[in-house]
Length: 305
Image 1 (cartoon, rainbow, N blue to C red):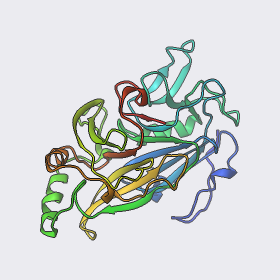
Image 2: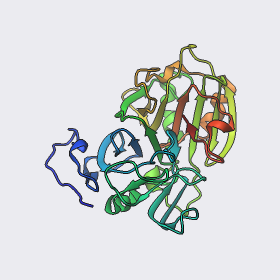
Image 3: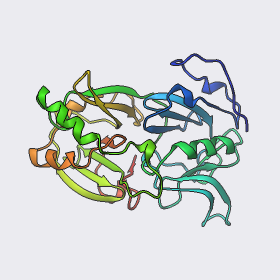
Image 4: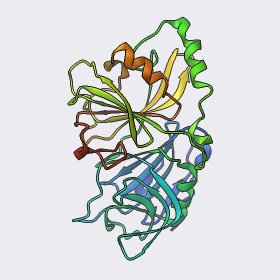
């Protein structure tokens, strides 16, 4: 299970298609700081790791075989355990486990034959899984999709769900400064992970803190499909006088919807409530699926497609 070292200039693509089973690339120096997002591409059998929108790693993987298909959708890391063992499959070792659902889907080290062979989990090279374990935290977004879509940078010209006058920007900065960046969060610290989900079917927006729904409000949008997108908040964008996000598409059709946060709004009461939960690294998910339990995996907010 080898680390592939190659001399690729910063900002250029990593040739993940050239990797043999068990190989990976790892270049954290390309973006040392910022929130991490992981994209699992089922058709490529690759895992792509982004930090602040810059791809820092690509690895081969093995996802679910026929009859045990790996689910697609937006997930967050719910639990981390370096020495985990399966409670379902004969106490099988699952080193460097990042749990994605409470019913057994996770990222972990395992055998990589070069094709889908797991019982639903995403198997990774052992060395890569250890490195990934070090950069994820509870709440790190993991997008599992049929194909891979690179993130794009989006600046919303206001807080979220509303605009504001230019002289309010300093106030917005002040509200973000006391809140820790995900890179600083230790597992034993009680810093909740915030996720916000907008559903066009339910016509509402919900705020989830860790695994609890803490608030909801009406969704007002342009009426067109929202598409399947997840936005990760990087923080304030002083030049654009707004919030700086990384946008990733997780739907089968990358053209559905638009990377435009201005499409969605809510009422003033929910907007004020939402500001109490905003922090760098939070998620904002667009979906055209309903938010009932059939599209969520237990206590977490996962949007299952």
